[in-house]
Length: 382
Image (cartoon, rainbow, N blue to C red):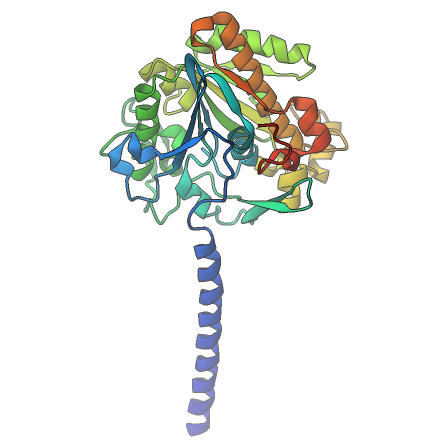
């Protein structure tokens, strides 16, 4: 009995020690996701916080940086929102590219790279997603970006209800959608953390009289609304002209109307509750899909996956899928080129409220040189 007791005690101590080591490693990784990734804003950008527009976010993990640059000439205002879903990297990398390169000549440009800051601090259980992606720049250095979760962190929102009821419409959705920023608009100043975040973004749109606003996303290649523009009915004429311009540049682009009976999404509620022209855009990313294999950093960066190649051969995808996959450079190039085309069309449709932005690379520039060539100010002419 005495020997067994000593043996059990030794085993318990070893297990406790192993548990403490695991906790220390996990804690270190968790703390590494606190704060925001480093940014290198181009000259002329002023840094604010979303709590400057809605004080109910101040001091919380939902608050996030807002960058604004004013042109010398008066005009309209444009918002680029990335990171609504932090596991969709082309959205926040595209927003970062604008932030780190743009020179505003006319009007004002607002950039929110990390919309759901809480979502960047965690990944979805059982998805085995990478915690970060690394983009190599032209000088050989690397930029690191967190690869987060579609959902707000359970540290900020818990427990998850069985059914999520969208407050302003009464629409019922699965409970996990309660943590999804793109189901929370128009928000609630006294609601859940994600509803307060949505309300803060709405307050920015209203307070700054934003003319045109973009919400940048990614979707799986087997999803019908992919490599697409989704437009509110008030934005549809501008979106149609832009889609035609992009097709003329040999950038195929679907155009989808915002469903009137699907509530909580930016392209619906921004248009219904503010004067802005809302646009949501989707690029095709295999790391978002259900057909994918291992969900690692390589997949997020290259979009190469054997299952998707097979699905493409069988005609099961809604977009072309070639031997190069769907690399991040292509996905970012699509978002950046689309925003640039929208700005051109806005100036043609409404010269007074036009916004002119220079020093942003074009589609072929990004494809040929890579995203990293335009991050951190490398290659700037300003």
